[in-house]
Image (tube, rainbow, N blue to C red; front, side):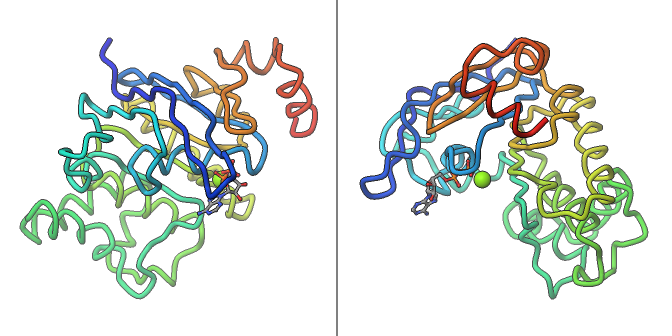
Length: 243
Ligand code: ADP
Ligand code: MG
């Protein structure tokens, strides 16, 4: 099994506020790692440090054998291999679905527009939105927009996908469709790191669950370990609140 992501003793402060206090984490090829933990514990900051949307104060991040902390590394090239899906979709609202999906492949990979559009059609089919290619983003529901955001990330053919609470901003009836797309991706072998409060998803799909609290990983293990046999008192009280 090969390592896709290796994080070593990652630290990040905002001013004098230590937000990540030494996170170490290995993710193998094809593995799905779910991160849970209270609000403000540093989960988003951790994901953002993985592609240098936030620059860590210290520690090492190696993605697909590329050390992104090395000043010689071209972070823009690394980012092309990392798909990121956010809570609030971050699509270009005034553009069509097709333009949102083909923008990066055309601009960054110099793909031919017709080829990129054909690929966009295929991706939209896999997320259940084949008929929306030419729709304007603003005409879509939140759940549809999030599935477009996933298709957009996949269009760059990423080696790893990072999800930051992808269903937290959705109306409840739309959550299932987005989770189904994510489950499908996991089944196809995509390496994924997913911050979520969807414990059903974590139990069903995660190979490993990490509990992050106050900038540290306090416990990690299989879903069965984390949800049925938690040890850390903070994890126990977190689970009592959310389950
Ligand atoms: P989580 O995603 O677990 O809710 P975050 O990573 O968003 O937590 O935030 C962790 C802490 O870092 C919080 O105290 C938050 O206020 C702080 N923080 C996050 N981003 C910034 C920023 N850009 N500037 C200052 N503080 C920040
Ligand atoms: Mg967050």
